[in-house]
Image 1: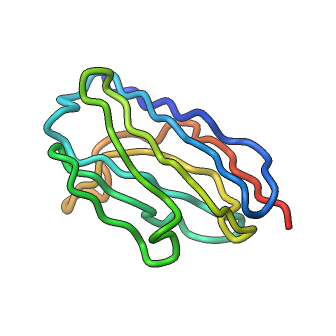
Image 2: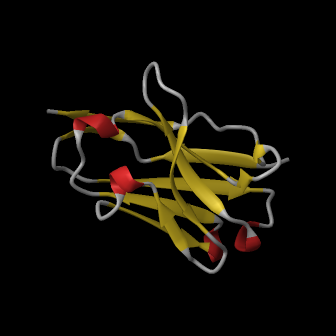
Amino acid sequence: QVQLVESGGGLVQAGGSLRLSCAASGTLFSIEVMAWYRQAPGKQRELVARITGRSTTYYTDSVKGRFTISRDNAKNRVYLQMNSLKPEDTAVYYCNAPSLRKGVLYSWGQGTQVTVSS
């Protein structure tokens, strides 16, 4: 059974930085596309960044140039370095594996809260 555990969130002032980490167990992690998502209060969950097994990346427009997704296949981890944070980045952040057929492959973890104060 796949388990996703996110960590690294917190409260930060606008302009600050955080590094999120996602630990994945029970998956063929090294060959899977992994992604970070976020859900702000009252809004739908959205994809923030995606990385392939060979580290090709994609970012949603609102975070381009500020966020960097990376992975460590040996440790089954995916990271999200977030710089120049804005109040609109406030959300619960989750990792998962995108699926064209199902949306995501695995059950959602608990997520990690990121709060950016102005």
